[in-house]
Amino acid sequence: MIQTQGQVATPEASRWLQRLCHHFSRKIAVRYDEHQGHATFPWGVCEMRADDTALHFSCTAASGEALARGRLTIDEHIKLFSRKSPLAVRWEAP
Image 1 (cartoon, one colour):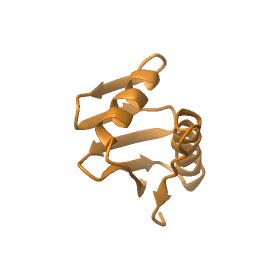
Image 2 (image 1 turned 90 degrees about the horizontal axis):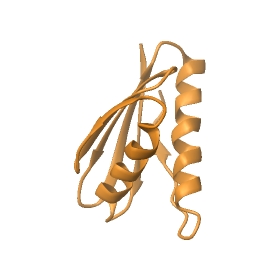
Image 3 (image 1 turned 135 degrees about the horizontal axis):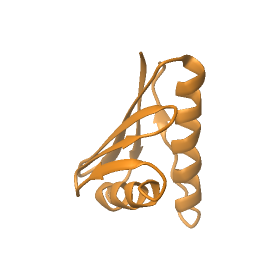
Image 4 (image 1 turned 60 degrees about the vertical axis):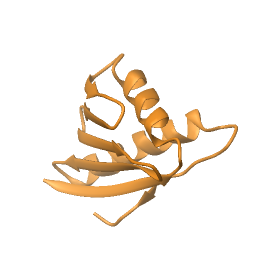
């Protein structure tokens, strides 16, 4: 398994976590509350955690290609949901 981590600096991390998880739950298995989320995608798993300063992502997949797909999924949803005040995920190397 390959893992990567990323974060979005925002004081509204809990709101973003809940919004993303609610959206994802329409198509995949998701568990979440105000501070953490667990989403099982076809490409792998993404754990999310919200604190006072950022929304943190920890994504795991079986291959580099699947992990890249996961990062793209998260990136595109953050971009879509933050159109008015753009946010971006800062990813660490896998």
